[in-house]
Length: 394
Image 1 (spheres, rainbow, N blue to C red):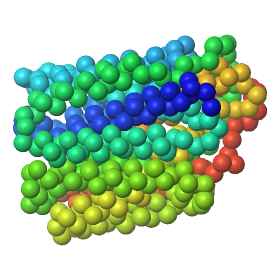
Image 2 (image 1 turned 180 degrees about the horizontal axis):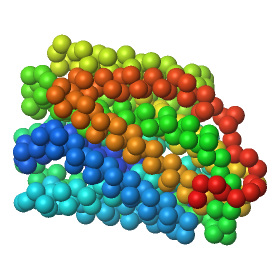
Image 3 (image 1 turned 90 degrees about the horizontal axis):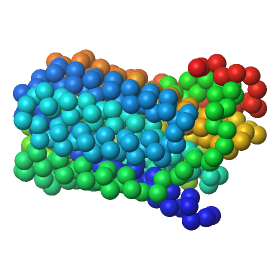
Image 4 (image 1 turned 90 degrees about the vertical axis):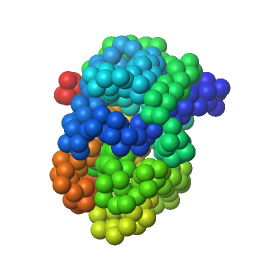
């Protein structure tokens, strides 16, 4: 293995970690932002809807530009947007500036989501073995750090969150994997089998529905439903991430031993049971236990989704530059499933649960069982046909 892939793998892991750190640092502070701007659960739902839609826009922009620009370049742009948006929303003196900063962050969030996974699947191809679970584990580690910082700094002013902008500014300089030079303009001339990709994408929708519900509404659930000490509401997120990170770090070996299908089905059953614990919890420590089990249940769905989509899209016998450009474009479009799930998790959970978040969390408790029939689409036997024809999803 040459030095370049090793350095690029470290750089990509740093980008995943940064995304998790910033995102979870902000979501665990949502009760504080809500108090600062006197936001109702409905107001918060609408702001989250705006952020999710703008993140989707950022991912669409990444897909469009991926045909001519490398994911490394686009990732740096996304990190720059995150670094610009965070201090504005954290220190805004008016509601308008807060919403503006949140909007800039939302676009950057989408660009970074898409391009980190482009980097991940490209490196996975270079290494010739599954490594995406460890990248998503880096995201989770960043989230753990973000939740830990929130717990440790619960008493400091909310404006101090602006210091998070330093992290993406540093990672911008990392040596990300460059694209192979070649006839990338022909990447769209090869058929992409969207039907199996859509099946995998539905699985990712279900994951992000659960993940976003836990990240955005978990702290608020503990705050509004129970007499949880104000400094401990981030415990809805922290143990969730710890359990998720542990399972992701073990994800490669678990999948190698038991296969994608079995791992996903067992995880779905655990996740549904965990959400039942959350919904019916009599006290906040029991709810925290439910969130912890939930993190373990859904941990590997997202990395296995991106790996499966890249494998299906990659094709055989393609010029390396064509393959990478094609997979980059497919991964950016595939990333849109992230935001469909986020809409269900962040917005639907809030709207359905506007009277009681117990009812809101009952929605993902049922829907996550959809992974049971979808798991077969993740099996490694599903792959792209040999290059022929014209792409049908342009």
